Length: 288
Image (cartoon, rainbow, N blue to C red; front, side):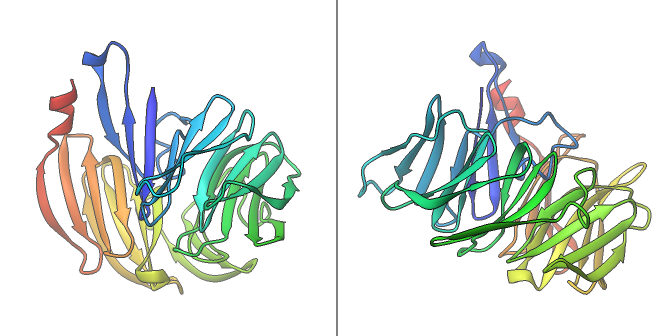
């Protein structure tokens, strides 16, 4: 069984295998960041950025829980959902080719629903406390915008092919990696570009400091590296790190926590481009 939660752009994912003594814990960004390293696993939890609301996958929909306890637990009868996520002040859910938004406060559907033109496998919300945009991955790649009673999508498959790595940043901005080209897309046009250099595969990406910089974790032949670049594509830092197994990025603080394949746990200051702390990961020893 796998459970995960989003908190301030960080995802803590607990993977539990039966019997319980075989359980283990893994840390990861939402799976768009790690699906090239691990199996694609269904999202079971999504947490609002404030930490107050938690959406939990159930057999016939989603349960919405107020962690403070002032609002009752609400059941969102969304049917057999493909994926869901807290996006701004709403919960978005995809069932088949239909995307439905639900109010976090009352749990009622926000009309109208949106019919999607292709099969969907993943829904990734944009960054920011007031986000109303998400990137939808599947047979095509769509950028969906939903604000109050207005909802629409734009097909970005031409500029962000489904075979490439893509991640939503703030607003309508995307980071797209195809080959060694790292491109920044805003409003359907390229606004910046950088070269990955020695690294050939992007594992994770996140905007930093409200969009003033972008951190990219890229994999080379023998090691990984964090590349911190400006939205224009100008390089700020390149921080070599051990090969990553899991990584989380706190975009507001500009700190990444990385669990390496060698068992090391690193805290990296992305603002100044240095390793803050290094230790051995304790959790696998506790849960094995």
